[in-house]
Image (cartoon, rainbow over all chains, first blue to last red; front, side, top):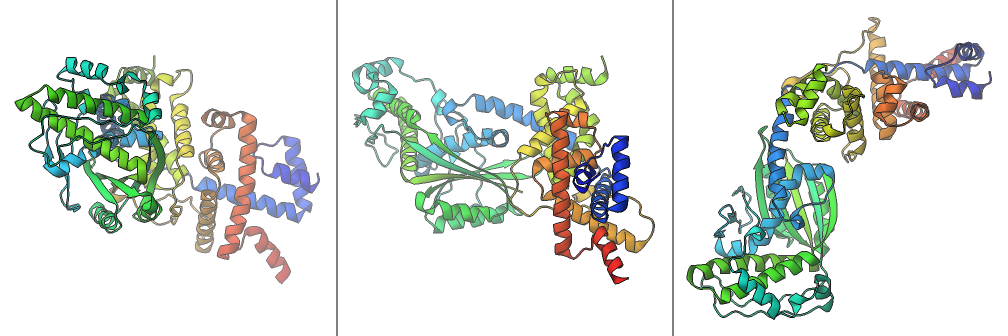
Length: 348
Length: 207
């Protein structure tokens, strides 16, 4: 046996008897191959010594079962949301973020009105309670529950229909609407009493992409990390819209923040976030919101039309809904134009 | 129908207590494999949780002709292979320090040495180098080394776990061993550890 052949079979752990004999004959006379064989032998021995049973942590099965319980619940919640609000990230993200992120995205759109009203409660949707934190202080943490406002059945179907037939825009397919870049000017006769701005906004139906970056970071102290990230964001002109705190069954807590960073600060912000702790996940996604925007805009106009034929309490309800949709449109528009959305997930 | 099959059938009907029993039967095996793959108690814990969550949702895809344990190991290895590498420095633990795991603090049972303290210290140092070198290999190579050398699986079971042919398992294992050896030599040189072969040569030279 020559050295080449010997080195090829040295590494094998199942040798034929004649191969074994030929190899040991060779090793007896070739010190180079003998050293090589000694390396492999020593490494194998070291690896075998690593095989010592490690005690399984207590409560592991209970943790899995409790996760399965809560994921089943979350799954139902996520399924009840409109598809456009669901995330399409990696499996790991889907599992851990699904419900929470959908909530974050949804309430993100409602924050504009929350800023003005403090607390928003949409009649017919008792679970919608959005509260924001205008001072950007992490001390106030409000668990948020939400249901999808899009699921609210329109109260005046007839007027929606008439609005649809009245508007030349609405007779076009969505893609045409986007392509034609039509300007929509909506009008309303009744003004809301609770809002500071009353004129309906003008939105353009153009193709829109929102770039999202998700960071999942494990930190030593959640409050410290939250303070740091909020202070940094504030001093660097990054707007922070939502904070959501989710207590886990095992006593840990997860904080999720949603930031809108100007495109020019996005890299700097990413660098800062990556230094907060151990990076568990990072994901990037561009969400095409063109159709979603067109749908929302249509809803906006139908609400405005309904408002024309409403009075009293109904008008107030419609106003709240109109403002919520308007805020979502405004935010979507802004984010698509010049922002990168950061979803920052902090856990300990 | 054996007990495991019954538990699987019940779990398929969303009986979580049946699935909990399955976890209790298999968690130690999954956790230990996870520990060898991740070389971290905490990561092994996370991985094991993910394995059972994944298993629960994929139970429909489990065919009873395969062994449930092998199926779980397959999920374990796949999940680990697909987990993004963390940017942090690999977790290098001292072999005789207790592994920090909160209340579940454990000591590694090092294989008994021949009682010579110098030899024992040398073993520890060398084993530490091997563990570190292993952690620097590609995940595919780490997986074959862990399965074959540390956990002692047969080529047949490895081919089931890794979903590839016997030939692929063997050739991957051979390449992994070669790369591991080179890495061990490199790390030994860097840390000033004298490898067995070179030591012998040096003695010859001195004489």
